[in-house]
Figure 1 (cartoon, rainbow, N blue to C red):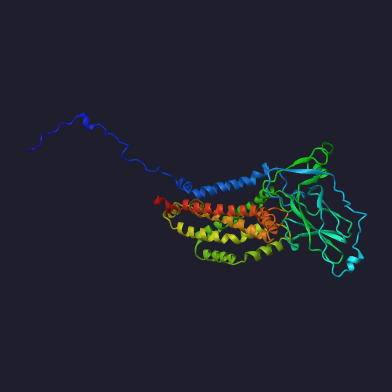
Figure 2 (figure 1 turned 120 degrees about the vertical axis):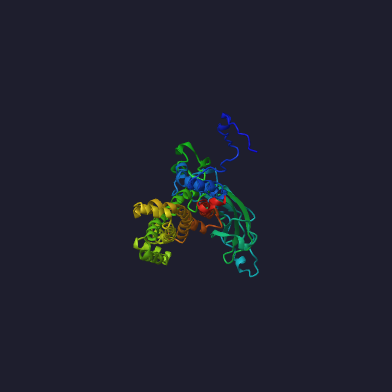
Length: 477
């Protein structure tokens, strides 16, 4: 039986309703660089490293504008001081040699009976040992009671309390008469607590019995020195015994009294300049060289790569010494330019080989062949198609090359082949801080910490960029 004919109305031809809730774009379309930035932001270690790198650049460029302290200015009153935010110094008059204490009624030498007695024992220590006046870094004056039959006294100083005669510490000096019972210490004093000891001698042997007292030494400077450093406005405005404020040293001072924070900032300019400028130059040179070799191919490629192999075989340290000698730079002089030149000359082959491998792969792609059929010239193909498609590899190579250059500069400066004092760099500061590592560890700790943080930050950032710029990662997310 045939079906009944259907009558169509205008409603049957109405446009269908479009529903947008059934299908949606799970992720908006992004370009290669947008997608790379998206994946880089998801890498927390890389983002933290990026902020550390930004902080280091601000520390290097903006820091000296905010912390206006001369990195070469020496303050011999504050040698190897630990980090401090505020300090006061005692004002004293220009030092005058203390005449000491002499007892005219006391014998200056032991009696003959004492010296001729074969059974004489050791001399006892003084019964009284005290400080005269206020002890400070300009002078510590000591006085003690005389000892019978003493021909003189030996004075010692230590940074801890001695418990035996072989722990008395630094021998400061001695008096040559038994009636001289005073001594003034002016030898390299710093704000600290010292333990002074004294022993008596009969002219032939020194007694092993001693007496010890602790002395708290405070920071002091002369009024003339305070006026010269701008701590006071005029000499008439102050008098001896008053205190004035000293500039803060947040990271302490070095062995010459120079501010560590200022030297670290200016040292960063040297270290980061070499660490960034050298990789930029040799990565650029290697990119151009490798792109041309890979595009040319054949015998030209083989010949150029043999040159790169020859450069790789050159010993870096020997080549560095030859450049220093050729530049006329002697021992103890800064060799920033030879160091930069050696890094550029000897470090480009690695980038060249990497870029060459990328170009050999890209030049066989279909879009390159299409551009060649449309009449594109060689330089256009290299600059427009090949090099831009290797930028990811180039950026990662640059990021990994920067910490290597920074570490190389630090190592060469540490062994005296790079930046030499008084020009600050993190490597030379580590070399200087190593000499006083046990007594003033902050002189070595802070530059070594900055080197470690910088190298670690650039390495982690390079890892993040390598993952973010890998096009194969797009299909996995």
